[in-house]
Length: 447
Image 1 (cartoon, one colour):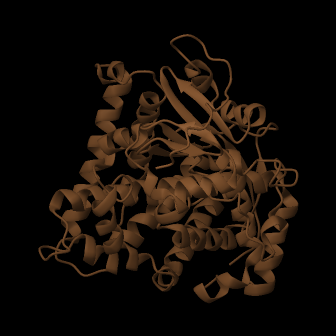
Image 2: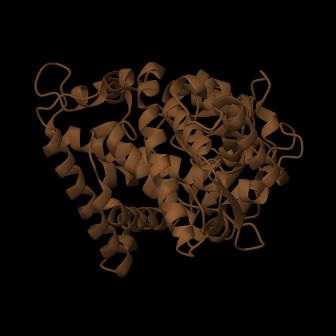
Image 3: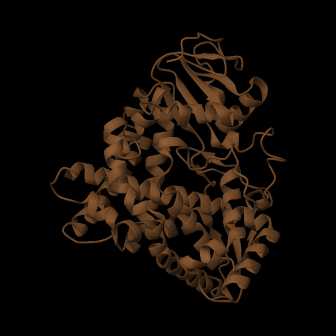
């Protein structure tokens, strides 16, 4: 706890009762950006009567997420609503419950384990390329990229985590996930949650979608019971023993991995291809690098470190469109950040979207420039996977998957936007492409 009371943080003029709720609901990304620009690196926002403090400097973000993480926990409104979907899991747990889960799951995400999965990433990407080639030959050259990348990432996650073939579930899972996450964000962005609990169309779609997802999870758990697989499954599905998870805990973790393991990477890849379609010189750079390193063959795990430009393209896409665009913490006691008073129980928000566009830390921050990530310099204002003890466990998985997918698909196709104006991101639990964002495909020769 910090004893110094500090000053009340500045913020935009608020409406009586509503606070900044209307502005946040209409354009939360724009509201965050303007709050940082007009009021500095600690800005006070009000969701009705609820104060929130947006922290927009790398040093203060590090305090909240890392050096003083014990003072800011995850018992927040966003996590409470997320627990309705996943229950207590790696994504929502605190304290000893989180430490236990992290210790069980951690070994399966060691870089050596991820290397063993690269052939799976490559074959899934090749299957996607083959399907697109057939589609182009049939005269259909435009692809809705959000669902396309969601399907690809879902197949990879299910096979990598659970050795499960989910081909027949891909479309149903994407629809269900869309319904569940839309209702989650509707609740998050409302002044009060109780109207969202009343019978309505959104609530019905949420309930039915969650039932479909949980039914899929039950099938996966039942199919995996008693079988040996990668370490993650052996640990999460272990029966008995001091480290074993109960059956309900197992299902929570499987649901979390399905959701987090495909939703985040799918959105990042979709944004990456959208950017490459509008920056063909960067796409050509990936092709040149792939030809130099691979010579027309498919990549292996040993090749990925030799594809630095391809990795930089994905990192730059994550800078502009971080899938996890905001991180919420709660001040356990009264604290001071940047000289400003943070009352006990107040939400503290760290937005990678805002930090990644902060003009004091990035040159021409709105410009797509993969060269930012080609040197050895560490970017203090870059945290697409979070920071501190809750850094995303799947970071190495996502980077390896993305580099492998790009190295397979870019030599096979050129991509061009269908719409002339770049799409505006849709902020919810994750940062999604607008529905119906299409890219046009031109088939090339490739492996």
